[in-house]
Length: 137
Image (cartoon, rainbow, N blue to C red; front, top):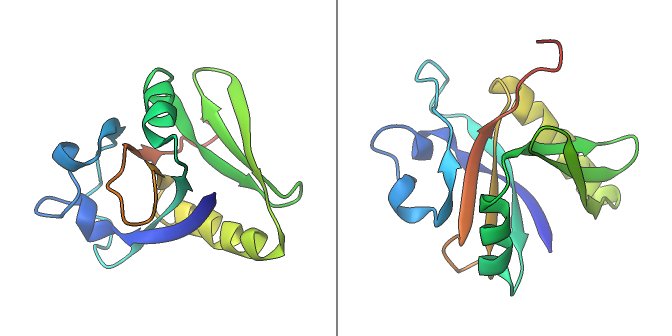
């Protein structure tokens, strides 16, 4: 199951609740301290009974980011230099959430996250805070 939502940016800043000690496998991109701390980082939570296996597999790749293609109604994970994986087909509600997700990424210079968890109440088996690099670079 895939869910799209936001976490407070302040959680990723110095003194926040999310750091390398509580993310499982994964990595945290540096956060620009000039960004407004009261904004929300948009992200995708993948809920699966095989969270540890999926997180371990992702840790073995170079996760570049997640993009929502609103026209095709797809959520696509980009890894390594040129690999893409279809993560989900988006229904109408998910498409609306994905539009907010993409707007939120744009507002924070590409910052977004992926969390892999067994269920909503479980700590992440893997967590990646990522910064999408603009295509025109």
